[in-house]
Image (tube, rainbow, N blue to C red; front, side):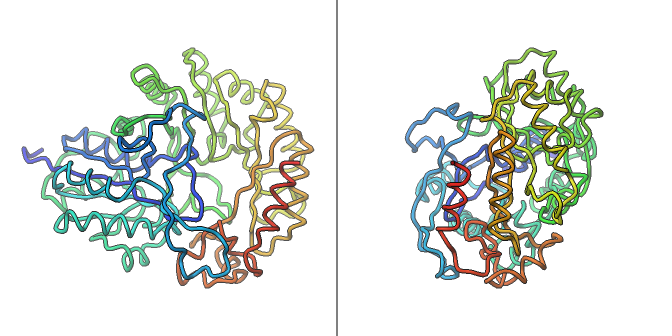
Length: 445
């Protein structure tokens, strides 16, 4: 390693949307890059434009609601693309003046890395990049993340970055740094062995309300609506020892009690992976809680795994049901009615209550009839758990994309904004609050 280790600034950008809420959302990939760069000797700075705990913001309890909470919200003009949507549009995150001050305080970096999430949030990325350019006009800037991977050409045309990087960045981040700064370092971790990765740099945040946890990467399924296989084509897993080392680190050194499973398929191999990890958690005696916003594979729920999840502190369970139209499932082949009902019984027998267990139901699919959603809601409620409505966002490159494009009232391919799930883009009819309200009332009744 040379003595001129670079200063690298990592940025989590603003969100522009009709609605946004921090449901355990943290830029895990970006903070993983920060950890890799730091362990190799780089000076790393980090600014989160979504920071709910910014020093200039009103003080709130980071541990409230298990680490969840509302973002700061500033009204913006609604995009002209949505004349039929009677909703307010906003920037979510810190004030632009706060970002300006923070950028001036960190000093000029040698390289800026910006991440991106939902494809239809690109206008927030664009605003963030413009703010960075205004302060550091000559610093090379690389954009990566979900939007950059799925909409590479659009990102190149639209967002003003010097380079668009697609796919998982940990294996390439040292090379990126070398290309743009001239600094080189020999990797001290193996990109194909998750046990060798440093823990993500959550300590760079102003507060650590919760810690996202990846015990595996990649997904063995290929659901028609999902982009997991496009974003991470490899299937990698960590050892129970590695997982326990990270849990112990954040809990005992930093006082974190809420952990959020970001795995796409934690229960895909319950005997070979999930059970050994959960057994290690039980043996440790750590007083921690787990949340599963990415959904659990229903077929992986057995009497044993249900009991292990309960004993290891799982507090929020979300099941990947998607639809209860079991006789006509074109989306995936992950579960039958009998398997769903049995999984719920096992979870309840293990000790979970109705409020802890929810089943995701996709809403707004191309060609989906309102009666189908209502039947699915009723089926989930009859099982004695909570229906959780998940609004469908068309994703380019997925098997359902062409069907979504044909069903939409918008030209989805023309602008990622049109894929925003908040506007129900795959309904032919104009945006209808009454339909949404009826579904929500059905859930609540």
